[in-house]
Image (cartoon, rainbow, N blue to C red; front, side, top):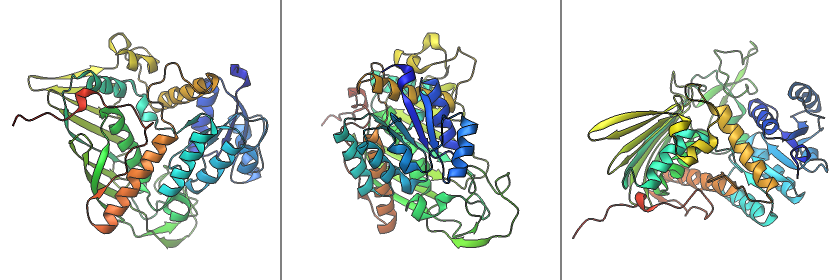
Length: 407
């Protein structure tokens, strides 16, 4: 299939839909159509994004005969039905997470994808930072030694105040988990991907610090009451059941301990995804807001490695785009992810270069962990996490195993 022949449809045209559309073009796709929440908004989005046409509904788009690959960027409650329809219609599918509102739905969709023979992807795009891949290579090569501690946080502040609102607040649209399903899933995916460990059991506490919020009808994602997302009108309030924050401690299948703090109400934190992996020989630290550097600590020294294509491992160099000193970021990670998916489509299901391209099995893995977090918080106890699907991430290297203690 030639580059021009890959016809792309984007369902959902908010912030993330525009990101998908841009990356699709850069990967050689032709933006054949879009669909929004109403036909009028669809027409506006088609003009803004340069799509060939607007479809009246997302359902019409995902089943259209002139679409090869569908990007599902709608509110969460539509992910499962739209993705199922797209797969049944023979489309390749890129679906935002969560795959479904609950674990049962995520399992159903992952099974449908596995039996469809189509290429699927879930945009856990932080995997595509060159410094993340460099950290992964340090673990896989044994440079870190066996990992003992995995810890960090993912902090935002865009839902800090009672006036901050978005459709994700509504559990009927976003699901029973908000902060953890939305951003905690990214943290867990990234740490499992880099470390090769899998979270085996966990203990979680969640907090809804704002049990009542102003109901604005839903501002666009990542716009706050302080910004330009409001319309100045008076609004009623609504009760909130989904969590604003979560604290999770866990054990991995290789005997390491870990913890993470997830929050959408941490003032001043915009998108601080941060992790540290502490091994027997060295520790590695990644900060998504400063992705040009990787901190590596040893007892005798600490080193700040800059992203420099001349000195990256082969795995990291594959996704590197710009020369050293020219900052790369989120958009380029998204480009690399979509490029991998499209290469896999053109390759008949195989990507010649991709290692760890996130697919629906990884979306299912996120649902498994989210489900365990909610069960633990509800029952106030440690719970086991379901074993990761076989296709999730890469197998752990011997460098990630726990140390043997002599008798």
